[in-house]
Image 1: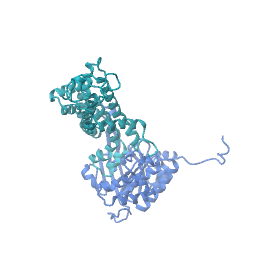
Image 2 (image 1 turned 90 degrees about the vertical axis):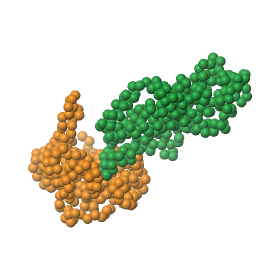
Image 3 (image 1 turned 90 degrees about the horizontal axis):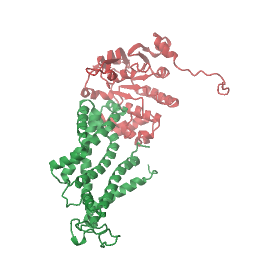
Image 4 (image 1 turned 30 degrees about the vertical axis):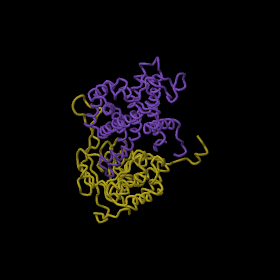
Length: 277
Length: 283
């Protein structure tokens, strides 16, 4: 194991995610300004390397004179909270149902399968908007909406993987040694499905960040005052001709974050799964 | 002995461990399922009568699809028969549910054909061999697991390895260690050497012969390879299309087959007859 170094993409993706975590945890120390402080004398300042910039406002300011870098840093907190809580909740619900459907088959499989079919026939973003409209705006309803919509991704893949694993002889041999069906599912099958769940979870965390940005973009996430990447993109869109930096920096951060989540999951599996040679 | 237990038959070793009467098993044919109604059933086992004597190795032979694996899996109740009766040491186990079967599991063990798929790839060898002991509430499972590894001539340092780090023969030794760790009263061997290369097969056969002699195992040995059966088994059951065509002591079945099918199977054993000098005079 030791001779296979850690692949470059894992370094890159892991490094970016570490940076985000540090930014989220240390936001008050890192952010040069208050993300909510408006200053109309400093509106639409360009990034610091362009003419007309003000020292201390590294990535410029938006139309209300709020510091773009500080808002990005504080936006990381919301993005990561959504990624972890919404991704984790979707993962728990979907994986549990997928394991049950795939292992027990029969009527549990048919019922769960029908629910998944019905769920997936709703257009996801419209479904999210509808849910947030019903639940009311706020971080908690964004998290609930993402979990409620995206558990089907986990359920379908975990079900298929569980069915493959359940046909292996080691399941029969566990029956022979006297394990109960529940014990087999948790102690024999689940460890073999776990790597797949891990990859899905990291993908889902990226998707959760995007969905949160979409909901912020249509102003259904949290109060538009609070710094979210999606909210910043929405605001930047209206003034792209005068202040491109308000739109471009949050988009770059969002892009790298989503990419890092997906690469991180795959990379971890490739590197640390003892069964893959 | 790994576990000392009294034998209920006073150690004569000649009583019947299994008595099978008129065993039937049919499965629904899902490929032929009509749009409405139940699928037609295919008969796999069509009324088998046999006994498996304690302390002996019973060979079950037959071509593919003859029902030998199905019969074996009924014996250890991985499958539930649709008709007939299976008595294990005087207890009718034909239709026992999981709860009633649980205490009997430690006595009904199995070694599988494919040693890769029958070992959980995410468990270490030590855990694979110790789990049967732990699940059945036997104390000092780790120590006993190491003893079982000794018995199959794998070093104790194998306990920390994963199945994918082993060769085919080593994996099959782990499968055997898992089965004998509980010191069960019956072990089913389902084609356990057919996936191995010839020299490994020979080593595993020697190991099995020694274990049978040392531990006085009662085994059912399923194979399509008559030469393997002849070497290891005391009695033979010949199956064809879900029916028993012949059964009896191995020498008798091999030397004076009563049924033409047995004679046909016997004639199909490849014998190492080579011409002198074949290596140096290619034809």
